[in-house]
Amino acid sequence: MTNADLSARRAAAISRGVGVTTPLFATRAENAELWDSEGRRFIDFAAGIAVVNTGHGHPRVIEAVKAQIERFTHTCHQVAPYESYVELAEKLNAAAPGDFAKKTMFATTGAEAVENAVKIARAHTGRQGVIAFAGGFHGRTFMGMALTGKVQPYKAGFGAMPGDVWHVPFPAEAHGITAADSLAAIEGLFKADVDPARVAAIIFEPVQGEGGFYPAPAELVSGLRAICDRHGILLIADEVQTGFARTGRLFAMDHYDVAADLVTMAKSLAGGFPLSAVVGRAEVMDAPNPGGLGGTYGGSPLGIAAALAVLEVIRDEDLCARADKLGGQLKARLRAMQNEIPEMADIRGPGFMVAVEFIDADGVPMPAMTNAVRDEALKRGLILLTCGVHGNVIRFLSPITIQDAVFDEALDILGDSLRAAKAAA
Image (cartoon, rainbow, N blue to C red; front, side, top):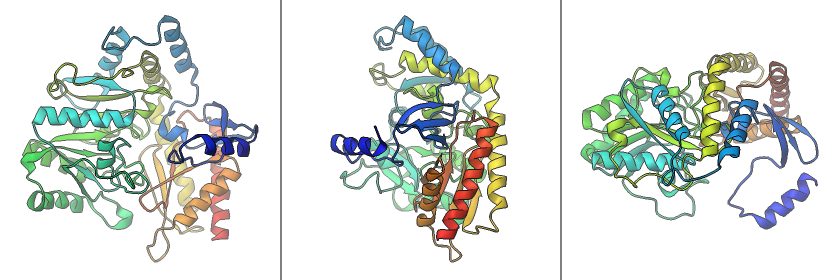
């Protein structure tokens, strides 16, 4: 069946609120390659939005899940627990940044992890308020929407958001916003809008994902830690997109000299299987009463088995080092083209969490050119994603396991697509 036929069926059967970014229907995928319903091959620089850092169908992940299926698929951990849940928690407690005792709980999605982190923070502090950042993305549940700093398409039409949530600007060098500006905005909130004694947590992404792949400067992270320590506020690092080798470290917070109190994880944690986690200080994680955390599918045995294999793959294949190598090559190729395409105003990102932002000579964001690059790349067999509050950023999220020859092919396609979009602009 053709992609067009399937698109027509999809439009008739599925809510239009579930958007799609490409008009192709996948039939199979392997590592960094994907084939559609018409048999056409694509190089996947989306990776399910950073879900398959270890590639589509990594053999070790698949074998681990097959072995678990043969034992059991579900018991609900709250009813009949299983050792693998404990083992993964132990491994994440040891691996997460911070030299202090930690505990973990598992859920299913990144939004659930964020919701639970806020619940835990409120239970521990006895406070309600949460400070987040403009441009941040934290999920599509109601608290996730409230924390997300982008109205379209995430908040529009859904009514009032949960209260006691405030936003401040996030540092973005391309737009003249500094870490000092962001920290000053928090102090301004404390003077004009909310008593810091009412604030339970500050949540941030070490690299903003949907907001435009802006890395948090070290000055911001250390400043947030200082503010939190001064006022008894918990610091939550949302590592849903940044975690598991994407930035060249197992966690993006490993790049900083301070640790968060709570870390949310999902996406590449389980290599394509639904699993999320909250990892944090033991005394904080123990604040909710028994039964206050959990969920029917939280810590699915299949997701747990996949995650244990993912951690082994990251270690054994040294994917943190490979992320640095691939990201460096990608940034070098893009920078070599900046004289030819000056609209690529900013090329940024740690490890293999790289983005390019398109801005014209007058400082105006260029979403049309950004989409043109994505469309040209798709015609040539390369799947790209855009992001950013202005829709003018392309983010590169290939599996870190991509073969060298396929990666080189993708860079050639990207170069041709940039030139074609420039010529058409």
